[in-house]
Length: 113
Length: 114
Image 1 (cartoon, each protein chain N blue to C red):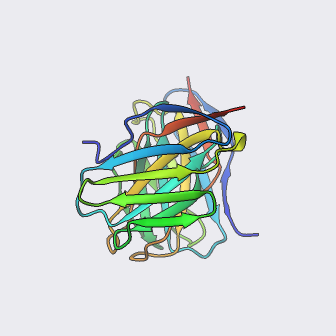
Image 2: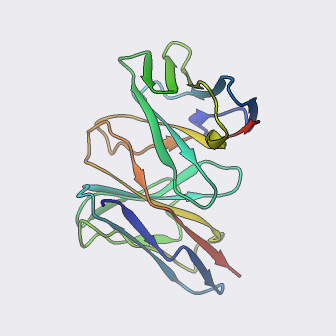
């Protein structure tokens, strides 16, 4: 049972444009959501998170939007840069338990010149 | 400079042998985790530990074992009972239970079993 889903395995965007990565979840108990960026043969790097009490969180070029009624979150990268090319994972957890993260399968973003 | 160290980066073993992957953190984090990544799949949780001398099975614990004798260390043993051990293994830590905070990951160990 895939509780966190990233339905687009890949995305290609031109440099300078907006990248939008999507994530859906099924467990209504999730209340903390994160995005990670991963390069090949390296560990994931934390990008940005959002608590369920918010619907938007910004950090520089990265913005995460949360739509609780639709059980959907998205990551916007503006403007996209070639160095953003990587695999992006969304993850979710229930705060107050062991807080284990449940990950999606990832979306490979390619930013072209 | 604080972080999580996984060693070695690449590991090769023959089928039927047990192998132990090292994970050390100097972030003073209470909780530690082991995940596995396979091509085209997300990260799947193997084991986690919230405190020294205590650990719990994750979603795919069969064929693996762990220990948590020290706060800084959380080694993972891949036993011969693990049917598909070839994978990229990631260790992570976070501040403590109950706090909404991100996991910090090491750079992983790629295990190849032939």
